[in-house]
Image (cartoon, rainbow, N blue to C red; front, side, top):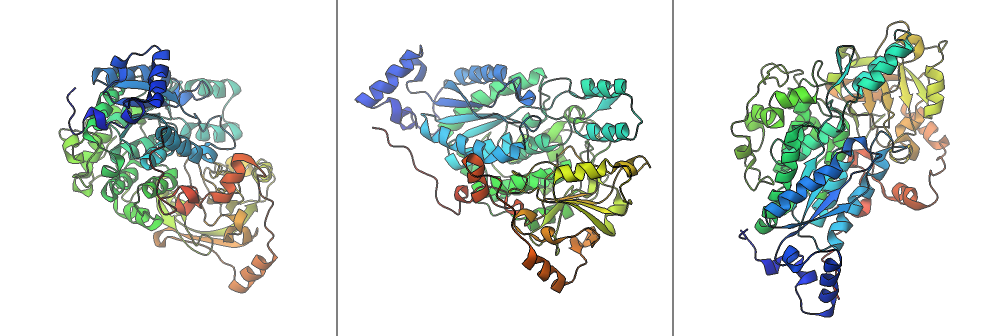
Length: 579
């Protein structure tokens, strides 16, 4: 392949292999130790394939094969592909939460890229935290990269009904608690809800974040919509391999792609898709790694003006990601948004976003709605403020009963998940549908790690009476597949003395969604007295990764990155010395 912008001697990897000295002799001899010859690497881009495959990560179970497809594409374009394993986490098995390790992925990605002779990288991820973690590290490392999304699994099925991961698990669990589902039916739902490899096929955090990556210009056009088992996914993987080689020769680095306009595009697309509430935390962190100052208020402004047009569960009612793909996928949705997007933004293709959307069509306008007939006239997220959340909280209005958009009721407060679980399973619990359930000590430090506990279960006493929603507040996150009148990410969190720590059972809580307010109706003098009497809890960790996490993690409204990893803290390290 003829280089388009730079010559072979200017490749980053040439620092390792080109000089006629003892150190380069050692590098070349070790390459030959692995069965390679100079013809494999000399004058060619060396591409790292950062693979998050693991047998404990069902979302990425196909990545061992996809890495070979990527290598094929790299060879076709005249490069050398080298597979490098990275930490693999998923929300299914990683406890207390994979969010505890998102910044670990980012650090490992950044340092792996910097310390190895790589000219470009293909990032392979998909399950919730892998997309932001991989891209945060790669943005900071600064060399050309392309993101390969894992793709959603096939739609679930049981007894002729389509099942959506997460969303239907919550729904059927409530029916089981109410005594409406037998053991055999529950086993059938368990076996039918996840039928293939791939990430959640609802518009949960995984689908949200891969859509954000594509809207930001980091994926090949349409890549995020392809179901994981589809043969097009294999072809897309090989195309990623070919394209990253071209990006190296073009010197198309992330600073040319992840701009303020690209971040705004990602925010608009997130709102239009009915995104996970987790998008807020991750998009803030990704933007700030690129030096783009994004705030909660910026996202709320986008939410107020962007219609939700993807009719995908849980914010939509009828469809799943496989339906979205066949309806035209993300390219069709972005094209439907028209000039709401900055179409001149450069993508990883080297072309403006608008050119990559040319010809995209909607094939089912009930799955991807026109702007004139949205699922919800505002975007999927709203940011609240008030004396319970002075630094912000997040809600998903489109995914809850509208009667809770303005609500006032007594608080029922729990200090831990076990305490809450014992109470909500008590059929004699003194609770009404007007109560406001509150779980605290579940934020970034309190959880620890900001777990997905925020969709608090409806008390069994209410479930048996037919109630399926009520107002719930927490400093936790919730799964992007969740739904209901849940207020999340309350900041500052209660564990560090935020106002949520001062709320007591019986206090009146008022939500005014139209005016974006969340308050406890408690006088300032009383709150001051409670604050003076508050005692900080014992730290969760005394050593190791958790100790580092609790000392350096930012609050939810700032993206939960580590303070020492942000652009404001200092410039990225330069190229490593080679002696």
